[in-house]
Length: 316
Image 1 (cartoon, rainbow, N blue to C red):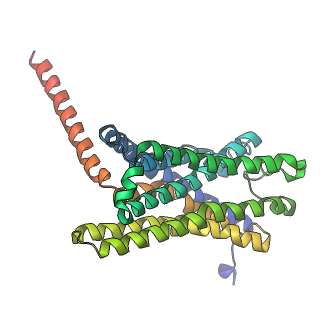
Image 2 (cartoon, helix red, strand yellow):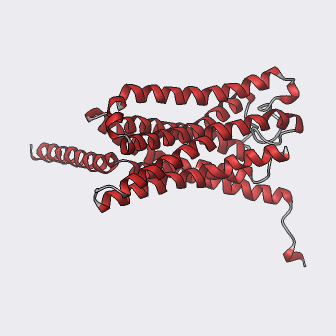
Image 3 (cartoon, helix red, strand yellow):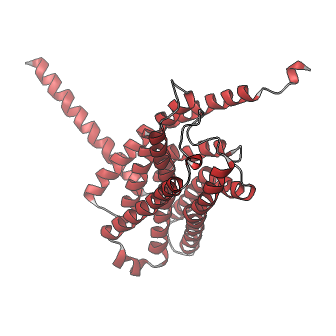
């Protein structure tokens, strides 16, 4: 029957493009103000008292903001406004897009390690709980992520022109890869997923399980114990739901040696991390609770002073 016939491939691709544009647009609308507010709160708190977790979350927030600010390039590429993305711009966008995704994973892991050390080894951790050490860890994370991005460009430019991953092919940037390109890229994707996702996931899972075991057996208030469980649930949910499918596509793609069709769906899920992270911020730190209250209080004071000045000027 005609009404039961499946849509043609071009129609399905056009429908998926519309869905992708809607999702990316929603991420920008939700993620930009929420991350900007979170960054302001963390900066406000850092001026009063800088802690390792604040340093990691400032980096995490900065990573998400950079990711969001470059999303319009992806939307233009998907919408085919005029022409395909130039080769150099495609390379730059992918370096930032995928680099910030893995940077977010690493900074979430760094927070979990800090909480583990603070809960399990509280006395010993005080010796190393210094902002300078956290800054060095943050620098190491950015260098690690940057190294993997540079590695892709080095591999690409050492091969022939037919292996260029970011060359214009009349389609979207970094898509419709040939078998020769996949043979070059699939092992790199697998290494990325193992080093920058599955290893951090294992560390994060271990840290939060250990933290919960210690806190459950402690004499802390029930409210604080519940908070620890929420921390673990929020962080691990982001790991599994946002980053898991995308990195599993790397493993499946390497085994089958193909660019799996559902990878584009997993990319949308990983992009959603940019506006979900502020929710994780709320669970991760009491600084977000107190910081929002203090920022809101300072804004009310400023607004009141402005209203008084306006009222006094009218009286004159």
